[in-house]
Length: 245
Image (cartoon, rainbow, N blue to C red; front, side, top):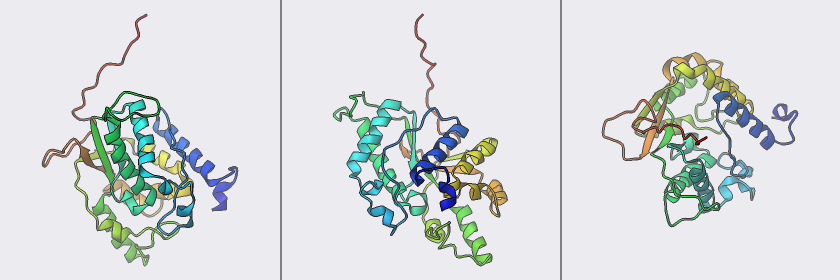
């Protein structure tokens, strides 16, 4: 949309500005880039660009991510679910690359570009979409005469197909105490429909019925029947390091 390119040299520059805006709202310490071009939904010409993420060797991207895992040494690692949330090719690719990066980062026999020591996050999750709420939205869209198989700005998201895939839930995070901050960050992504996610017809419904984020645990093996309420549950927090004066 040309409207969103005003003041920017490219859509990539616009998207980077939106990401940094959201990071600022959330209070993130930093934002890091892999340097690849956004791909599009299945069938998009953007997917054929030689710099598109999905055109890169999976092993190369996994090595990039593993390098950041070693550099940043996170306690908890999060990525997309196996279908990339709404079947976006980039999201699916990053899911696969991050799973491989998790393995590489802790492998003593693998050497990254900076020769950093191995690191394995204490926990690794895939964020999933609440299927119950999604199925409700599918029914509601049909009630209003809209096709749930052609959702989104470009009509290229099939909510019906997405709602039919179930993943186990191992952690449920109630974000209502910080919902306003979350919404502010979402609104930063205006060119990607961020504003529409926090307002309009579905906003009140989302606040009531979908005020929780769901996670599937990949590592360590989840305990049967146990649902966590904090992704950092069970992680021993060491006191901050202080240099001697």
